[in-house]
Image (tube, rainbow, N blue to C red; front, side):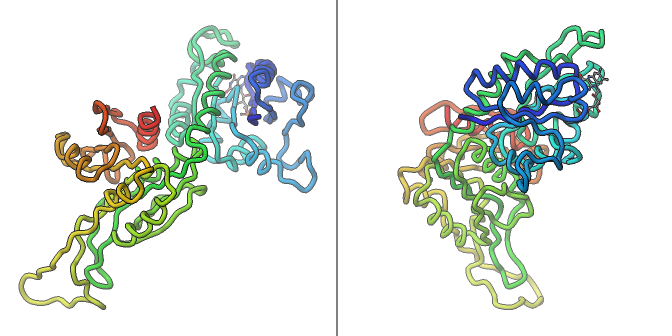
Length: 391
Ligand SMILES: Cc1cc2nc3c(=O)[nH]c(=O)nc-3n(C[C@H](O)[C@H](O)[C@H](O)COP(=O)(O)O)c2cc1C
């Protein structure tokens, strides 16, 4: 049975949360409710305790089980955190990472899918601050059930009514089902740049930030996969629940990828691996001299091609950074590497790719028509990619 923590905040629509809790239970979920102080001006814990048969969480320091930190326990046990109705204040706190009551503290500790159903006056909903917080939450991977248009409790008209319970239940079930799409699967992702030593203090590298690899890993985790990230040197935070193997050079990345990919179901080669490395790296520090300096370069192995041939059971997807939208080179790469598909991004456009927070992918498959993600956040691209790959 899937466990839903239903966070109820201070909106008139809080009265609808009682029916929502029952609807979720009818749909096969166990429901535990967490009320903010403002929510308790509208609805009481006893109502939800009677309906759900579970204790209600209301105060960060009042724990149903003595000695257990409820905000951590509930966060770990939940399969979905649904905030419905989400007040402007509560969604701002979750977006900003504040933890000044039980619901916001629990949301901070929670690592699974988050579904937000806002309800508020239309002016509050359209306020740039509220819109910015909603955008932040969505960029971080939260699901949203948009409020409906109509007459709201305060007598005004516009977008702000809590979505119907049927829609919220439907989205909750979709978020829960999403969690099982890669259940039991091992996904190996290479990410970031590699550094190829010229001497002990200098290296050849590239502008890959590792953001795209981190996003592909985050989405794979949210779909229920076991995830290994083999990351070149980057400062991008990687998901805490991924197994992270840190490497520096292409040769190290190849060894780590071949080891991790032995039992992999999916291998996604997002890393920008240096094509060449200095043939004879110098020990210590090279000294400045007169005239030009020649550094001989030798080709690095094609990691993703080696992985594809070493583990034919795995579905292997390569990434290609191409300087134009000409897909011919990418098609050729896909054939040469023996991969199932290749995700191409056009690195000649400054607004997407490399250090940017956004990207646009074109997915070429060995067995199908190309499709495009359109321009989105890197997390949005990662979601689109997994949707496209899983069909
Ligand atoms: C009668 C009444 C109705 C309210 N309805 C809403 C609402 O629908 N949405 C909202 O964001 N705030 C609403 N508010 C304001 C919130 O309750 C207030 O901002 C509160 O601090 C939210 O706290 P919470 O986010 O911790 O629940 C309402 C306030 C009152 C007095």
